[in-house]
Length: 214
Image: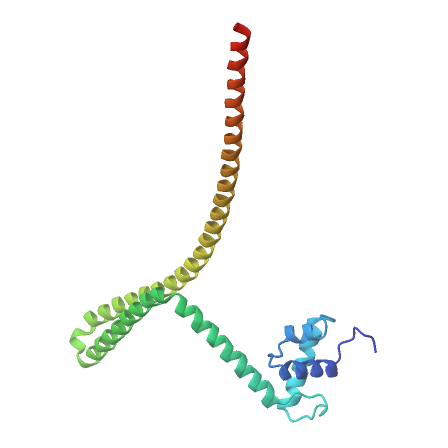
């Protein structure tokens, strides 16, 4: 068997090793575990075949098979880690998500009013046309509010990216400022030395002139 050949057995062994280390056995992780050898499409094909075996009752090789329960547990752990990361990101932009909560509260109020209007529509046929107009307007307001929520989410992302850019620019400016300060200090020191030399040269010139006059 060629060293580069990716077999179903090798994919099972890689999955088992990843799960044992607490790593979710995705196609990318298996590919890396195998030393980035072979095509990822081949790995995905074998993984699908193994999944079908596990869920259709076909018995895979017991020496290398990764139990379905273990894979499910790994998926749960991986999902929990993703939820933790999402929670951390949301807490970092608390003031913007607060604005989103306000808009969502407005959405809830609009939905409540819309339901009340629809109930009135069923109760009173004589007000049917007027209530239909009201419901349409409230639905439009609800759509606008949902658009505001999406816009706020985009602003949160843009603000986070802008903040990182500003921090990088600030650090670069501080570094440049320190470099300029060091250069200025060196120039000032050199100017002091040149000034002292100039004073001595002037004094020597005056002394030489006096000696020549005498």
